[in-house]
Length: 251
Image (cartoon, rainbow, N blue to C red; front, side, top):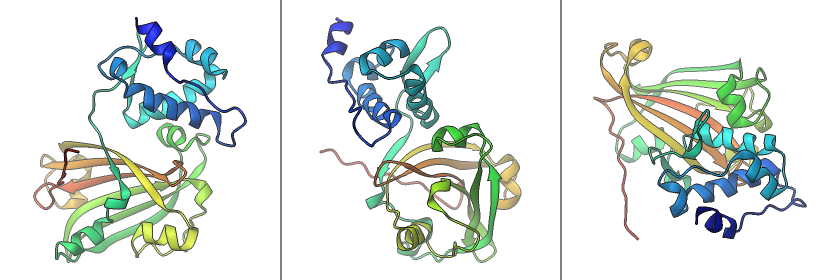
């Protein structure tokens, strides 16, 4: 029954399209894992089966699934197979999302940059997978410690896709997405997020808390209007200064 239902799905890609094959495959797998027969833990079709069905190489399938695994949407177990991950992350439309500074301003809290650092770093395996770039390529890293006067609230680290063209001379004092839109014409449309509690550890000194104090960790994958990876961002929030609120409405 599984095979019959799976074969009836509209799984096909456009080989004449300008959209890269791995991005088309990625979008198909996103839809696949939300279907009733897969979202409850049933193993996805094997790489070779998908490759034959779609008329692409196994490397193309692997490139797509690597990114989805990195986002936390897939779980891959050697010798067993690949399945949809249980829903742990939040996906939010950025048309309803603000920068931290803008969000705090709307709450009547004025935050400032207590520290700001810009540097070029070598892409590790996580960044190379998400951005689909060679491991070892240089990417721009932005680090920000934000809070009120002398009182840190959150520490951010952002990494940007090299195609954007950001450099050290850009004004990172203004809201990031405002600068990206006005100077580079990049409009961010979607983010996939993972949120969890953790101990402060090595971030404790920056946030002025104890290493054993709990903090909130948020990992964000940001995409532009063409659904291309744009920014990888992590944030470490003081749990005594910040609450991550989520408003869910039933439609």
